[in-house]
Length: 81
Length: 193
Image (cartoon, rainbow over all chains, first blue to last red):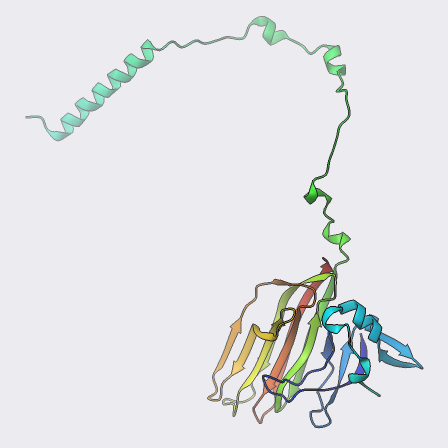
């Protein structure tokens, strides 16, 4: 598992819960509800290393999950650590 | 005047006589084995006999199906635990079945420690499932503290299969002003379709 910093979306309501727009992940520690970000753990194969930094492997997620994730954009989710 | 007990005895005796008469009338043949039958031995030729021809095996559909170990099964553990004060409805973990795969979900544990007798507002922990193309709906397991301090839980420990694009997630909410411990744990056995 790899740890990355991501955007937290939603309003914390039943209809729009705070969540992360990734197919498979686990929150690591508490979320920062004010700054709207949190750390998550994602599968190794869904990450890629660029310039010594762990990034989301956009292409892998698109092909691995297909259908609902075929237009997934990593830039909409990840934040710089 | 015949007493009832004597009458029963008389009837039984009549039935017995009838049964004996039937047996005597039937032809019963008892065949005794002969000395040749008892002394018979298997000849060497019979022992050496072989079955000729080609055995043909045509696997049916079920026999040809791959065994589970051929289906690249993988065990996935989803867990989140923490002590957190007031927070809105928050997804703690999500699992989505990849394309071309299936997954059996098994519920492992759900814990919510209540630090006070009476909650100010509702605190809740749920498991929600998403069928492909639909919306997330509860519930596999639900733990709940009501505003008047009661604690309730709804448990469904039955395992079930998720198909490609289906998802499952663990959710917590703490409407209380006091922090509580939350813990949700599930195991998924993922394998090829």
